[in-house]
Structure formats: C-alpha cells, structure tokens
Image (cartoon, rainbow, N blue to C red; front, side, top):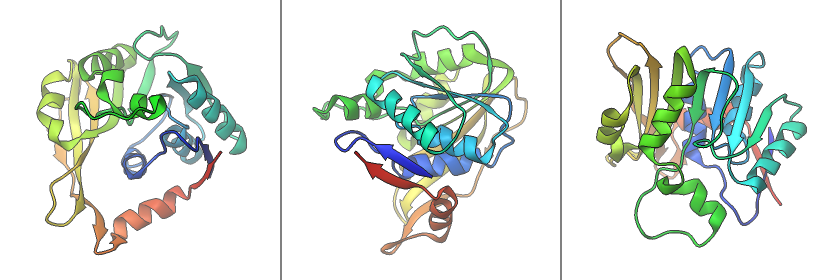
Length: 227
C-alpha cells in the first residue's frame, strides 16, 4: 500500500503498525470509525484487509484529511472522510467499531510544528472526553480498539465509561528487559468476560526487528512517499 505523507508533518510509526495487527485479531465488520486518521494508514489498512466494512475516518486537520483523500484514491479504497473535530462532530449513525491511535503524550516540551503537536499531544483529544464520545457513538454491542501510553493504564481503567469494559490488552516493549511503552486495548459495551492479557509484543531483538514485529511490517506492506 502506497501512502503519501507530509514531508514536514507527523508520519505514522510502529505504534500504528502494532495497533493495526492487534485490530486484525478480531472480527471487524459493519460500520467502522477511525478517530484521528492522520494520513489514513490505520483505517486504510483495515479496509484493505476487511473490504466489506463501511469505513469512516474523521480527522480535524484539513491538510491531513487531504492526504487521506489522496491515499484512498491511490489505493482504490472506498472510504468516507470527515474533516472535523471528533469531539464536536454530530454523526448520523452508530458504529460497530471505533479504532484509534490517538494523541497521548503529556508534558510541556512540545513541537512547534502544529501538525505534529496536534497528532502527538493529549490536549488535542483529552482522554476522558475522547472515551465518553466514543461510548456515545458506538452501537449497543460496539467495540473500541485503540493504543495508548502504557504508563497511563491506571487512568485508562478509571476513565473507561460504562457500559464499555476492557476485554483484551497487550503490552509492547521496545526491547527485552525494557519497560513497556505502549498498550493495545480492546473494550466492548456490555461485556461480561474477564480481561485477557495477551503475550507481550517485543519491538527489537538486538539491532533488528523481532520476528513478530518484522512479520507485522511485512503484513502491512506499506510504502511511504513524502511530498
């Protein structure tokens, strides 16, 4: 899949690749919404692998929405693109799945590049408001699959609004003997099952990708073109 990205803006990274792989472990179907599409990589990969889904991508930055439009045409995929703020937009339908690699970094050291700042820092999409809006746009048995900073697991559990309940989680470690940096989470409305904690995902072994990480990149098969 060829993906055009801004030369001086935010570019997708391993977080998105690992989230894409995590999403494909589940039975994705029906109406699917990606929140904060960036250049569209996550949603477009899922649409490529699950062509029967009805995909909507909402992205607040107009320049990135234009990249999604360009990339969906480049890859011949049917996708509805909405250029608006997720927290303010009124949808005319409910979604069976919401997927997202949201901005989740905190702190005061921030990029002066507005595109990068919006894509990376939580002030663009505060966790509590984000979770509550997702809960409101999901269908009665809808699912929410996303990633976040692993250090925020306590906040994630505390702020997950009912009837959403976490059913699956997986921690990603950049290397063996390093602390987890990313958590992949699946939550379902009205779920009754206990949480499944999946085996850890390791990013690198020595100087190379781990076997699993390399397999994920191979499955995604993306080619980035910066313009």
